[in-house]
Image (cartoon, rainbow, N blue to C red):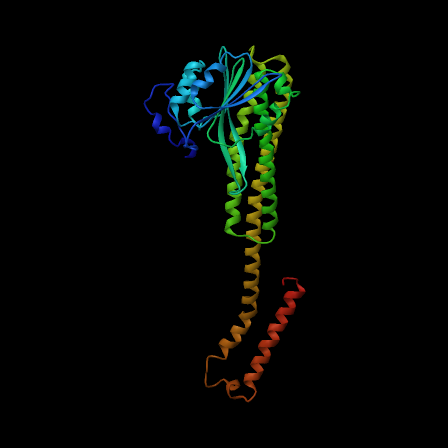
Length: 353
């Protein structure tokens, strides 16, 4: 149901309608601009959408990061000035969009999922990132503050770095690469959670563990849905004949493709491990249930002959001579204790207890 939420708000509207599908995750839309070339770097916090217009035909490279998607009129203005197709704007506003890539005459549009781990809640945060590549600018659209792009911002400060020397296509690669690299961090966190859970299963089992296993399996499924389309995206990016992707960037895209395949392999391995955790949990539950049944069976088996003896001498018939015998009560106790000890010794000899 999560992926269909708010979809009804678009019912009956024509294609390209600017309707935000998702949650409002920031109060006001922010526009951050980093304009750079080999020698200069300038950071700008735009006060209005019109401040971005001059970067369309700038001789420098520009990274324009739009934070917040709920004010649709801002995206409409950007689309009109930067010649962004209405269907692309529609896809950007639909935060349930599947990861994909689209090619236009003067732009490349990449939509993918940024995933990072919430340390406090110990849950995955999944956010849609839309990237538009043009000759001299790159747009990124994200839902809220906080992302995985801080290493890119730091690298842009380095005059000798590749980001400053290359064109916007390399910036596109760098943004995608840092998103994919963060998948490894997320998987590492999940691996640690599974290891701790597996260790706890050997000590005790409770309802919270099965809930945690289901949560891990669900998060791995979300990871798979986010990662699998990336392989196709990068393949199309490498194979498409476009002037926006330079030959010097192709080798880096090959490396990015390798990273994506590694992430997919690790994700599949962890999904098998999560299924193994479920089997371990069920085995431990079954083992502990067998132990309980074993104890109850031994107790019942011991008390069966004792109950038989007590039942016989509890009938109170007049012709039972043992009832009037002076040592009858103590003899019955002795027989019962002897049988108890005999059966206990037998069970120990068989290593049943």
